[in-house]
Length: 101
Image (tube, rainbow, N blue to C red; front, side):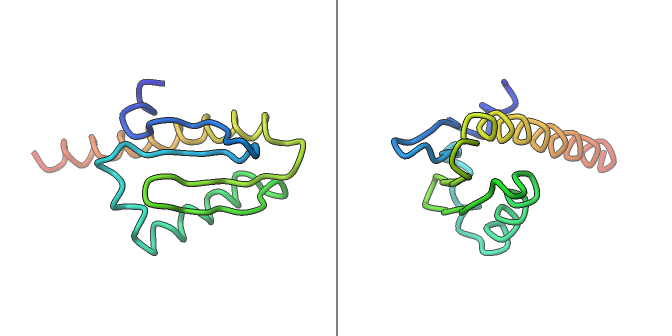
């Protein structure tokens, strides 16, 4: 999960069993971009399918509400998909850097 920790502070439940995803401080500004917000919502709906209820985006935290009874499996799914997505993004950036050299 080292890849995850470079970008994400934590992924955990709040007191209402919503999934909280907190970004490292240097990436906060991305959450204010409307395109990014829209892409995050689309990605969450695509990954969680019928379990998706709501996505709320704050200054540094995304709050993801999922269907009752699916919280645990979806927490693991979100963690797994975050790692996959970040690894793909990093590989892409490395390819771009090699191409530019």
